[in-house]
Amino acid sequence: MPAGRKRAEEPPAKGATAEEAPARRARSKRAARGYHHGDLKRVLVEAGLALLEEGGVEAVRVREAARRAGVSPAAPFRHFPSREEFLRAVALAGIERFQLASAAEVAAAPSPLLRFRALGLASVRFALEHPALFELLNGPAFRGDPEGARALLAAADEARSRLQKMLEEARAGGELRPTDPVVTEVAGRALAYGLARMFLDGHLPREGAMELTAAVLDVLGEGLATRRPDPG
Image (cartoon, rainbow, N blue to C red; front, side, top):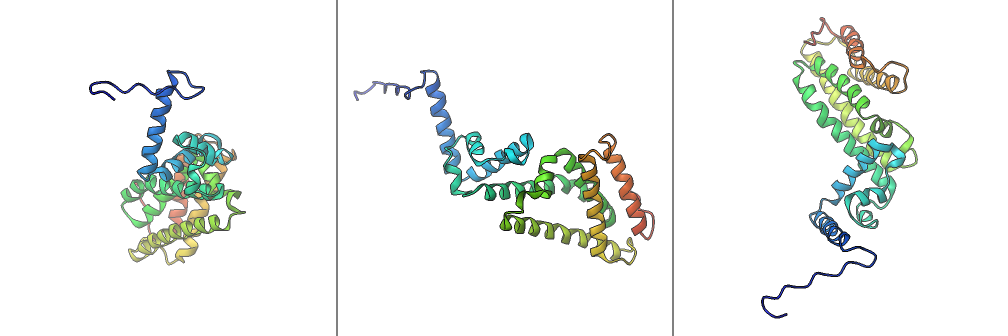
């Protein structure tokens, strides 16, 4: 090519107009950058979470996540060979979102027993804000996926351990009556789950849901505490 002469513009792809061709090349470059930077898996999971929020579990499809990520339909299968594995990753990312969303509220509570209460409040609030994620984590999606069920059980075991530690600290600090922390943890978790399910299924009104949740958790706390806890 002679010096000073600009390279001619590439002709539009077959079937594309001259206006569409630059946009198509830009999308291709963005997709290539994302893939080579190693963040495609994260982008796909975020797309999966968005699909879940928009249309429920049935809307979470690898092909649609790939379209939203700007990559070919085959690209995700390097990370997610099956829809079950993709759903599993979306579910685990949802658990991580809950942990991040609840961390500040729990940390702000001034005592272990009140942290236990704060986690119950955060659990119900998150379920009401993300009902499709609640259904994915608690519904039948993983009944035919033993590995996915094991992954969720492992995450649940970790959460139970944290709750039991809070209760053990509460008992050591004189806040909690001498009760079995495992039984108390199950009672708290069942209460939060049951309230969330009743709100979502319409058995309890959504209006005033968090006020009712706080009041119910206070009844549990009063039964457990050596003295009446002050939630502030």
